[in-house]
Structure formats: structure tokens, C-alpha cells
Length: 371
Image (cartoon, rainbow, N blue to C red; front, side, top):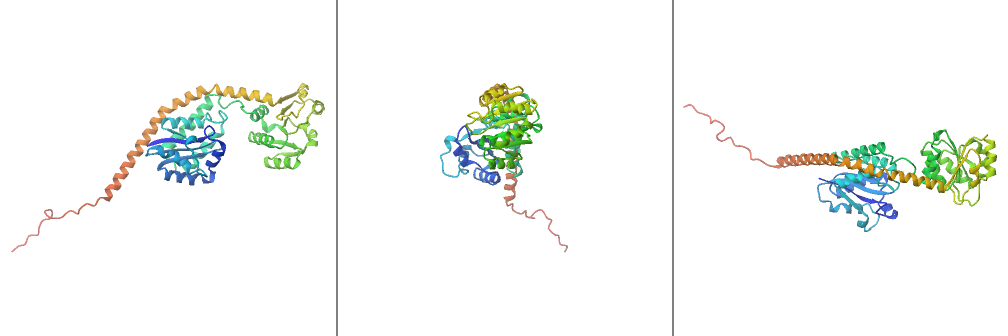
């Protein structure tokens, strides 16, 4: 029995191709059964995320046909071969362990992929699509990921501008902070979404488009504020994030000085994600005010990325330590399943054989007659 992993990812295929292969969650089980049938697979887990579509499976046949299974997922006829990778045996094990730990992700060490893989595995297991081999493989992948997270810093430190901003805010409990976001566009919404995900409960959203601010506030449980009234709300907030497309300065140094008087000099964190900047750089000179602009955040994000990259060697060592024992176990499971299958087939063949009924000649004593 052969173990394999096949698919496409952001490294091998552009987003327009990945979109055509993407599978909706509600269709995962049905399509996995189709792939299992057409591919003559014994076990299968189908994974579909925004950055990758992958098939993990086992088969008794040669794996030359596996790439063609991905064509079944494509909405139109395309030459997928240049974009598809195929790993077998130990290479397939190594690939899954790397993906599960976030080592193959666009953002190195991100944790979201681990949850996505767990979800894909649980869906397949509950549908009866996995067996001894994939069950053991995926469970070991989660164990290895847990070990990597506990022994290394691969998931620590922000590596994007938005996550760096949230990390700066989250040095204290986000649920205890009051935050105002200036703007209601894509960048602002992304910040609000991340803040809510990290536990923020008190969020004010202020925008020139008050309707958009209301929509965003309703969607994420915040409170909309007219842009002209935002300064009246700021004395009570702990953090202000500016993320607008405005070319004007929305908060001047004078605004901040007056604001700090109303706050009685209570510390204020300002984060300016806008280009051009919306907060006067001179505001950083005001006592108890901390101001970060997008270049500051980019520098911090680069430091976080470099710190994660330094952990890669240790992560790879942990993965390589898991592979030999896991391969041995998987081969043992595969051999056991093969023997069981052969025994089952032998029994089925035995039941199909027709044996002649034995005769009684020479076995039963002939009756004797008295004269």
C-alpha cells in the first residue's frame, strides 16, 4: 500500500487556478468519495484552503494516475501538471508535518492551517474515509506540531503589519481595552476582524461614510461614531488606529495635546496605518503618547519574521525525528491491512468453491438378511 500527498499551493499555482480547484466545505465529503472511487484509493483526506488544495491518501496501485484526480476538481479543462506536486512515502509524511506546523505557509509559523487540517481530517474520519494509516499519520502530525509550538518560537512574534499592530495593543488584555478605529475600508475592516478574533470587546468605528461605519459596527459588535464626533469619544479610549484613504491629517498635535488634557495624561497608544499619514508625526512628542506609523510596524514585522526563520532548523530537526518511527508504524499498519485483505479474499474464494457431496458407498454397512 502506497501513501501519497498531492496538490497545488500558493507556491506552485496562481490564485486564479487555485480558485478553480477550491472545494466548498459542504461538498468536501461528496467529492472525496468521488476521488476515492475514481482513484481506487483505500483512504483519503481532502484539504481545501485559500492557499492550497491537497489530497492525502493510500492506494494499492501505482501513483501515476494521482495527478489526474485533481483535474476532477477543476471547473474547466486546464493543464495542471506543471502546478501539481506529488510526494510518496516518507516525503508525503514530511510534507504533511511541515504543512500542519505552518512551515509551508505564506506566513511562516501561522497557526490557522493547523485548525484547517484538523477540520479536514475530522470530516474525513467521521465520513469513514480514513483508516489505520491516515488516522495514525494525522494524529502524529498534530503531536509533532504541538511539540514544535512548545519547543520553538516559530509561532511567536508578529510577522505582518496588521498583526504587529494588534500585538502592540495586546500587550495587555484586549478585552479590557477600548479601541477606536478611524476608517471603514478594507484595511480598517481587517484590523477590526483581527481585534475581535483576539478578544477585543469595546471597539468604536469612525468614518466619513457613516453608513459604512454602521455596517462594520453591526457586523463585528462595535459602535459607530461620526468622524466629526470622534474626538469627543477619544478621552475614554486606550488606543486609536488610523486606517483611512484620506490624504489629510485627521489628528494634529494640537488635537492630541487637548485630548491628553481631557484624559488627565492617561497613556494613549496611536497607530497610523495610513499612507499618507493621518496622524501628525509631532504627536509622538506629547507626554504619555506613543505613536507608531506603518514604517515602524513594518520594521517590527521584519524582526518577527527573522526571529521565526531562526527557529526553522530546530523545527526541521523535530520533524525528521518523528519520520523514521512513523514510517515503520505506517508500514506495519499497511502490512496488517494487506494480510487482512488477503485473508478476507481467501475466505470469499473458499465460499465460492463447489465441492462434490460425499457418497455413502463403503461407509455405511449393508443390511444383512436372515434366511
